[in-house]
Image (cartoon, rainbow, N blue to C red):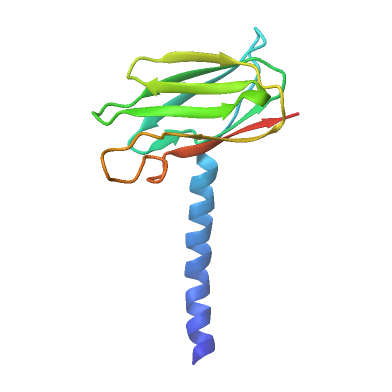
Length: 137
């Protein structure tokens, strides 16, 4: 009887796992190099998320993020602090697209997140507004 229950649960777990991994992959963005030699990425900050939330760029190639916020009243920012890798971004996000330029000089994975907080509540990073900037060869 236990074997039958496990056999019934296994397909359900496989479906759930595949949909979760597919959702995570949808937010991955691998930047390409434009004809002018710049890697451009548009980042949208919404209610406790970034889209995309995993960005891959090449080392020693200029990057330009175009960052904007979706409609809403909650203030958000974006922080990516790795000055030793040529990345030091601290920007309040507005509805108007804001360009941010930098050239990553070191391979690695760098966290990006919002550190805004309302009174005694969790900060936005704790609510899920975080991601990864991955710099590759």
